[in-house]
Image (cartoon, rainbow, N blue to C red; front, side, top):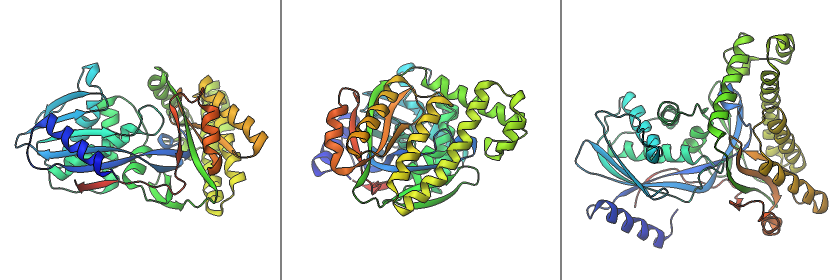
Length: 388
């Protein structure tokens, strides 16, 4: 995954931080771009993400103590905690470390006898761009902690541990999509996940002449976390009103009958989830047959639903989607696009002619302040633990 020079740089950085010793081993986990199925995972719905060729890397080695020492070069910060008494850090400058602490705590709960070690975290995965940097951090450090303990667990169980870390230590009530695709990615495929049954189906990515492109607004609105949890609470209340555990069990008929018992916002949230689940099924079928026109149409419908019914878009995201639609009318190179991730900032994912990427990236440069990236239509990714 890393070039020879980058491996050398990381090894030197590790030794500078933790001192000379045995060569560290390496655990890597990819980010992900969700193609379609936004805000459906915690509602027991369907999602269709793919891993991307951007990763979080954790270098690690044992330190002969009952403590974990961890350094993140992404935030240039250090943390250390005792494996016998793990608790969330209240230091706002160490909030990032709660993802690591939370995974360690979740693994201990699952009977893994963790051992002390030094962890050095690096990433080419941008934070806050809707590429699930938090899940990549959880899975990468989880693999490192397991390797230090000389234990393995099922990849889905590791994903659950990452989700638990997010809930209990980071305070974000996320669904299971991000951790699942990061832990179970398969090169050359998108991952169709049923978040109710937790069944997985790998859908081949073979779009001739087209790729998925990411255009990052560079915007990170502060209300993202609180509004995410608010949307989740609205959905849970709506499901309870209709006597269902999640919105997955809700039918259109049930929604119509319950309309007078739901708030206007709850009705809109349910409408998005129901229609988005249908779009996931249609998207998977279109992907399998290589129907780029249908794929683009479904992306556009998804964005409209996220902006109007789920109300998680923002002017910066809408502006990029509108510019892409305008360019599509001119040259036909972008069949469709939508916001990706939790919302209120982050990035737009677009289906784009591969040959048009550089032209579109230049055109969107003033709007995509966080940068543009062509995501391999082959869904290339690396996840696992190897020796350096």
